[in-house]
Image (cartoon, rainbow, N blue to C red; front, side):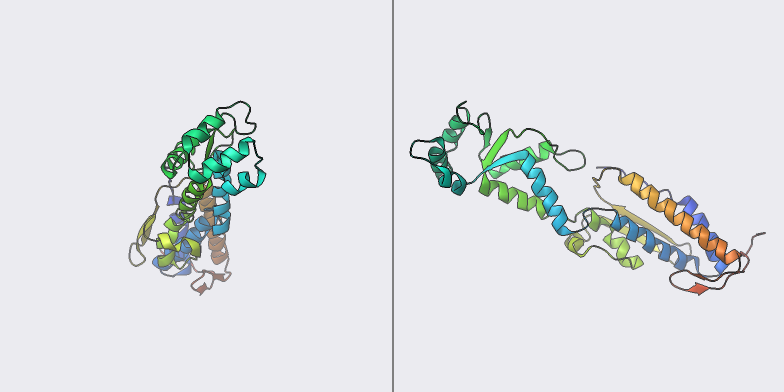
Amino acid sequence: MISLELRTKDLENALFRLASAGRVSYGAVIKEEARYVTQLLIKFTPPDTQSQGRKAISKDFGKLITPLRHDYFKERETESGFYRSISRYIRKRESSKLQQLFNNPNLKGYFGLRLLTNANQITELHKKRRTRYGRVHSGAKQFAAYAKDARQVMKGVQERVGWTVSGWIPAARVTGARWKKFSGKFEGKSGSQVSNFGPNPFIVARNFNVKIPNYQKDVDAVLRSRIGTTQRKLDRVLAGKAVNLGFVRVRGGQPILGSTI
């Protein structure tokens, strides 16, 4: 699990000054800003589409194992060739005989492969070969598996596409942010939020088990961007220019209450 930290003190200070200058509810400003931040976090959390995520997983499994399809070898078998035997062994799931063939140095393209005989072995290999970010490194394939077993395991992993991005759905619901619909089936399982937009407003959003390279860097960039945007809005208000805060349009030129500015 990767620890994710959001340092929002500077953003909160800027939002408080903006709310004071615009003479609007600080809670409403916090809620609207939380909507913007949540929207950006969702945008930067892959995958963009369910199809994109499924393709990435399929690519990972392609790096991991060589699938053994009966029809592939059946179409290429000869009367006395290796493929005739492989075709028969796959159909009957004669694993020990298949492994013996893979140990034969005359079997080009498959020599040296270790046969995974069931779905559980494929699952364990996938877990072992995944990086801390949940992806599989490229490298020489060392394993083979029955295609049916490989498809079963791969589809199971593909069913989890959207897990990480769904962690932001609780925050999206209370702030009005949009989320990626394909991730909705995991709502409530991969994230949570606690919030109050009345007196002493706040929101605490948690996304569980994030495994994305450079994610902290992206989050920090989101916060810097929002601080800059808030400061520009504050400058406009103090310069006497109207500003659309998202939930209301305020007139500029109003002094910050309790401030010497």
